[in-house]
Amino acid sequence: MNRFSRLTTGQAVVRFMARQFVERDGHENRFIDGIWAIFGHGNVAGLGQGIVEFSQAEGLKFFRPQHEQAMVHTAAAYAKHRNRLATFACTTSIGPGAANMITGAAGATVNRVPVLLLPSDYFANRVPDPVLQQLEHPLERDVSVNDAFRSVSRFFDRISRPEQLLASFPEAFRILTDPAETGAVTISLPEDVQAEAHDWPIEFFEKRIWHVRRPVPEPELVQEAIELLKAAKRPIIISGGGTIYSEASEELRHFAEEFGIPVTETQAGKGVLNWNHSMNAGPIGSNGATSANKLARDADLVIAIGTRLSDFTTASKSAFQNPTVHFLGVNVVPMDANKLSARPIVADAKRALDVLRIELKKAGFAGTRMEYRNEIKNLKEEWDAKVTELRTPQEDSGLLAELAAIGLVNETIGGKATVVCAAGGMPGELLRLWRPEDPKAYHMEYGFSCMGYEIPGGVGVKLADPDREVVVMVGDGSYLMMNSEIVTAVGEGLRLTIVLIDNHGYQCILGLQRAVGVSDFGNELRYRDSGTKQLTGEYIPVDFQKHAESMGANSTTARTADELRKALKNARNADRVTVIVVPVDPEKRMPGMGTWWDVPVAEVSGEERTRKTRETYERATESQRTVFA
Image (tube, rainbow, N blue to C red):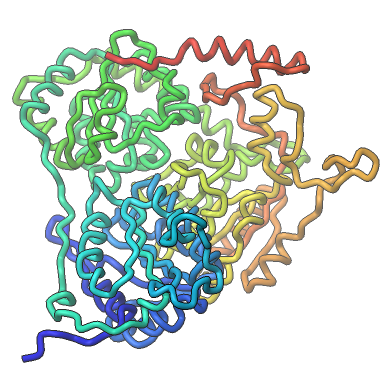
């Protein structure tokens, strides 16, 4: 009996990917749901031929995007919405096509979401060197453009012989499906190796089910956590993306309700509890709520669940001012569980919360005092009233404020729809103002804050959850970077809504520029002044409506609250992508909330304003804490 199957490497890659499944809590599904590809001479005859011949037979859907970076963002968004239990593979040609995926790889790895990248590479046999688009290194002959993936991938390998795939691919999928190790996995495929045939053991292609582990907390560490909780009078929870990926919303709700511990949210963790839940104290950190940040300031115990505690979450380590504050880290990633000198519980959030709740009840822990619970209630009510005020359109004749546009979109499409955003000032505004009603109603790429993620991200969410209403909110600056995937969405027949906020450039960074004492310079979309030769002329009038229409989308411009409401309702009944252009007043900004983010100010300057801003900055750094007990 023949125990081998003779296939090219490209064909073997497709067949192997199609037969990898994951299982968690008894639920099983295919892990690689499809292949995104932009073909060139480096992959069209190798992996491309394998896709043509094998993908449909193996049940893998093929997608053709417009940009290599965009397809990685789409795969990452898909994986994030699927709680990391499914993703896409992405392949490109050699050279610039491969290099274009590096930004997307970095975003996936920073955000701890799985994507499989299959860039082409130079000839392994080196006979025709240098081939078109090959990087020649003067000292190392085995270096290529693809080596740039090493620093942004959780796993990297170059397959210089077909049989190397036998060891490499299983390890790649182990990492992709491990919640503690996942991120971008890059398998570099030389273009000649892709087309080479090999006698593959048929066992290599047998269906494999990868168990997505849920590590349980160690009993000794649980007892330490119980002692910390029993001693705490003002505990808070910081809930990150890991809580949502673990599908631990109900466990968190029970825990918070039973013990009277407020839940604060990160960008990745927003929506874990309904916005109006009594124990949802709102977002924390530099873009946080006054309620959450007041509680954080005086907290004596911070329980960080499924969060990597970025600088925005900790307000650059200035958020926690209680001199006796302790930290408890619950995370599947040991590095994250140990941050801020936390007592670490390296475990799955869902299982850890269950165990902690049971053991706390056994220990007779009744929860926080009524005075503290009343304080939480009052702070929450004050914050909710402030949010309503900020996002309500003002009765004036001017353009809408960006804040009002956010409120109008949220109210019109509802809290069950998913909002997608990524970079600039809007994520901070959405974190404060958006009111989600389920854990998948808020989708933010803010770990890498990558401009251009928004529209591909919306495509990924819609593919992951076709029946869900999806609205992408994107600024004009980010839209100009990567609007190409509107064409992809049109081609795939996807119906989603893109709300394009037109504020004439990078107003977020302009605001930051002013905050750090620098004069307005280089951030707005303006003509070059013929007299001064500086970019200080009139705004460049871009017709975004016509641009979107030229790519096959429905498009309209909404200048008033009523026009925006009408456009959103029409978009829900449309048969394709709708782009709604909303011109806003760039000077109607989010007011200060007394929070801080560490952005250094120039220490030496000829400008008095910059020197005074530096003095303020130095005073602010005195609130930073670099060491915790």
